[in-house]
Length: 137
Image 1 (cartoon, one colour):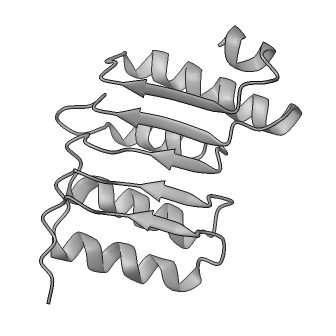
Image 2 (image 1 turned 90 degrees about the vertical axis):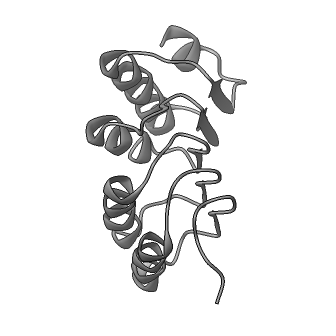
């Protein structure tokens, strides 16, 4: 937490295969949120392979509302439960520019839900869902 808030040159926070408790993730997300309001923002928040069976609703909401401009949640075993939360978040038109959801377990219904949520989103510039269970038509 201190490193995130005190290192003004840091613009990216990334974890790959790091498993922490919900409370620890919450503290990290809060540190990013505070940093982004008070100082030079953290542009990218990357959490890949950190949640094998999917991410808890609470942590997912914390990550999405961290105010990072780009979020990478690749290869975390996410599926329909998480797609609903992500879609609600995207529909609120947050200041998120990029969302990477590669290598999860999203299917066609999840892809449609995410696509529908983008109709009211004017800020997201990139959404990557490569490597999911989405069938091309």
